[in-house]
Amino acid sequence: MDLKPYIRSIADFPKPGIMFRDITPMLKSADAMKEVIRQMAEPFRQSGVTSVLAAEARGFVFGAPLAMELGCAFVPVRKPGKLPGETQQFQYDLEYGSDTLEIHSDAITAGDRVLLVDDLLATGGTIEACLNLARQQEATVVGAAFVIELTFLKGRDRLDGIDVVSLLQYATEDADE
Amino acid sequence: MDLKPYIRSIADFPKPGIMFRDITPMLKSADAMKEVIRQMAEPFRQSGVTSVLAAEARGFVFGAPLAMELGCAFVPVRKPGKLPGETQQFQYDLEYGSDTLEIHSDAITAGDRVLLVDDLLATGGTIEACLNLARQQEATVVGAAFVIELTFLKGRDRLDGIDVVSLLQYATEDADE
Image (cartoon, each protein chain N blue to C red):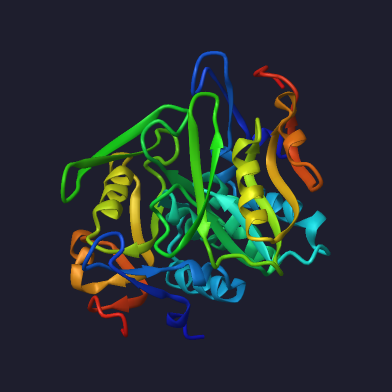
């Protein structure tokens, strides 16, 4: 099943010069979604994953079904103030300013084997924050799985020492790719 | 399978006097999640649902797997500025001020049969906004499915004329319930 036709390219979003790769057509096809979740799970079926970690909001769309597919826990990573229990935070730099993500402190522990999940790997800031959150909890991060990777942004370089998998790659900002 | 043990009650969140019903223990159990998705799907298997509509962020956790279970489209409802295509908006009142949600204009059309999904039915503001978004697009809304319903807040009364299903009900703010 060719998954790329389920991605729509929209120019100049969220700002001029950016070609946004829109996953909403993929979400409209249950068959495509089942194939996506199968392909994201496949490389990690023998990895002993105990927790899938994904950041709001688009990460939840793939993280929750993937955890069910792998038969493991889903751990939501959220913006500050959303999780009701005691949390562990991680602050990270953006192009301008910074952002903070958090998880429940009891969500993962030293024995856990964590798979990081998101829809898109771009510059890698969000997923690196998730990686650091997991490592702060002394969990073992076994890998990261993405639907889309924008290879020209080299986000993969920030995920040193873990197994990084993406289903669809884009090497440029071209609409035709 | 008794699902209530997978809900944790946390007092005084997000503000004093509120007993927050926390779903994160449920998310940690793939078995519980599979049962939740099965139970949410069950009443709507013969309803000809073409689209599951759910608002960010917690709605995505249940909406995406439920759409896969029902073999239909998942349509994300988002805060303004997140969806890259042309959008349709709906503004609604909160206790203080107002909020806006949007969907892609081409996400649902007049022929669609929509199931609204969220983790929690409280006062019903968010889900009523989703209902109005779907109706603005002239789609038929067949029902709404929730994991938790806070029955004392009577959100159900705002969802006139559709089939409302919840898996777990709380009639008070008591921690022991």
